[in-house]
Image 1 (cartoon, rainbow, N blue to C red):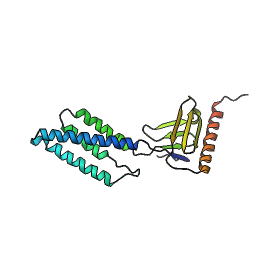
Image 2 (cartoon, rainbow, N blue to C red; image 1 turned 90 degrees about the vertical axis):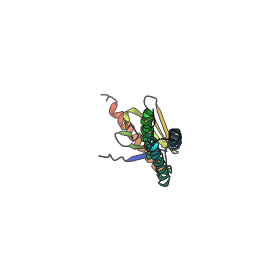
Image 3 (cartoon, rainbow, N blue to C red; image 1 turned 135 degrees about the vertical axis):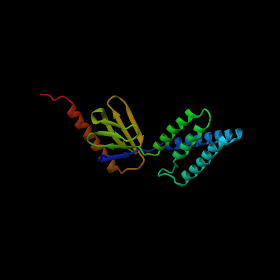
Image 4 (cartoon, rainbow, N blue to C red; image 1 turned 90 degrees about the horizontal axis):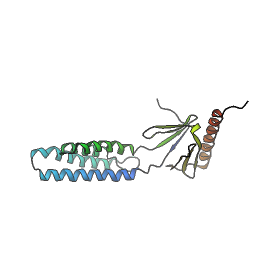
Length: 193
């Protein structure tokens, strides 16, 4: 069951460009290694490697034909086929396992990081899911396109948000966060009699 949040802040995703570069690097390393192995070992045993290399190229072409919402192609299937190629190469088992992990992380890099804000606290939707209740937070605000969360343990979290929000929405969100923090502070402080 999905939880409804009165406020959702979408953060700017700065990891897409490095993930795109690393994906290209993994593709090129796999393609050159597989091609080199196929040329130096001309037997029937290299046919599966050649087939996987061709499938990698086809997956790469399809990736560029279907760009994701963020303008970058998803190399998920290209990296999966690269991992399968490494399974065929001698001594490539551990590299193949690393490529499977890289494919999952590449897919995660296309998911926008959203922060849900409600009366209970702040929830980060990225992997792993994190929740911070208001009694752990000293201040939470959005100003000039930057989200700032100041935790009571002197930790500071600042990130740019992906879209411009109006001054009214910014003010409304800041007032909501302040009221939640104040309410959590009043509930946690011992009542004086």
